[in-house]
Every structure is written in structure tokens, then in C-alpha cells.
Image 1 (cartoon, rainbow, N blue to C red):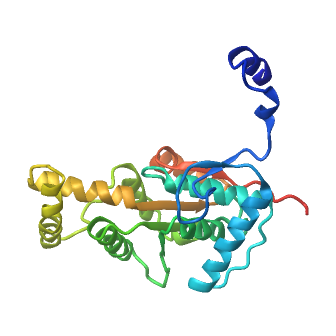
Image 2: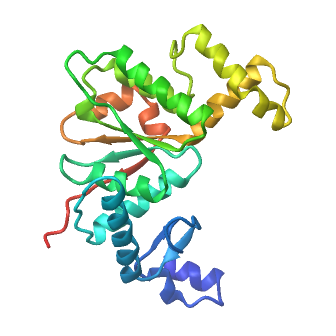
Length: 256
């Protein structure tokens, strides 16, 4: 069907290119650090780009030895594409150990995003999660820093965490995230920028400006497992984890 359509609609195009492999587009095809959305036409080029990225990651952040076979490289490109898109948050679905976190870290590094992750400890509560997120909000909204917030199902020790994540994904507004005095500080902190953007510096406009920037700069990546009914139940209770993310499925790695 694809072939017929191409023949009919695009006479000047040779239909063999419809099924050309690899069919990959990403934001680092022209080199890392120069985001341009372009196709990758050759596996060799992609391998070289990602190996360079991994070497820099290992030098600058921490040692991570990934085997970059074709599936893994395609996942990095997909996650990178999601992170580069406006308000791009991801739901990565795959069994434990399929590389969701490591490949996300590499993709975030390529997009120059800081990685933030919950460090669960005994008695970690909703208040702790809110404290952590309020820090990320200030960093993203006031300092304009790009951040990837990585969360796995092992870190959801309390289902109420997902209420917060659901709000974060759907509207960016989390109830009682900041005390009143902190809200005032934020509003006065962005006031000049709001004026600079040509808007009237009302409280509503200042707060909206702050939340919009948080939504632009704070990317959420959820790494969940499809095993059992947990994900099905959660996606019914907390619809934003499906509707406000782009889903990337991790299938079984090939034998080799």
C-alpha cells in the first residue's frame, strides 16, 4: 500500500527509498551539541556519535559501560527525540534490566539536561517528594535549567506519589508545593522577565510565566514495567502518565 501511494502521489520519488533502513531521525545527527532534527542515514555514523557521547559521559559524570547495539541506539534516539520536543515527557515500558534508565541518562546528557532522581530511604514520604520537586521547580523555573526527572516503579513506595506526578504532567500545578512566602519570592523573582516579555506583571501572569517555564524545562521520564496489572491499574487511576507522555516500548533484546 505504501508503495502504491508513493507511486501515485509522488511521481518524482523513487519508491525504493520508502523502505530504506535505518529510518531514524534525531536531534544530534549533525553532531552532539548542535541540535538539528535530521535523519541518520548510516549505522556507522550513529555508532560513532553515541560512542563519543558515552566517552564524554564517562569522563564528566560517571562510568557507564553500555553495549551500543542497534536496538539500544534506536532507543537513545527515540528518548532524545522525546526530550527535545516541547514539554516532552516519556513513559518507557519494559521489564527490569532492559536499559531504560541508562539509555535515558545518555539521552539526557546528549540534550544537556541535568538528571534528577529520587533517592528512596526509610520513611520517604509525600512531603519529601514535594520538597525534592519544589527544588527542581525553582531550578527550572527561576534559573531556566533543563532537567530530566527520572522515576522508576521501584521508587513509587506510595501510590500518592503518582497523584503528584499526574498533576506535574497534566498541568504543572502541584497543590501546596510552595508555602505562601515562597510563592511571593517566585513572583517577584520573575517579574522583570515577565515585563521584558511584554506582558503585564500581574500575579497571575508572573505565576503562569513561572509554571510555563517549568513545564518547558522539566522533563519527566517514567520507567515502568509491563509485568502484572500494576501499569494497567495505574494508567486508569492516573491518566496523565499515558496521555501527557510519549510512550516508548522496550521489547526483548535480540539474541546476539
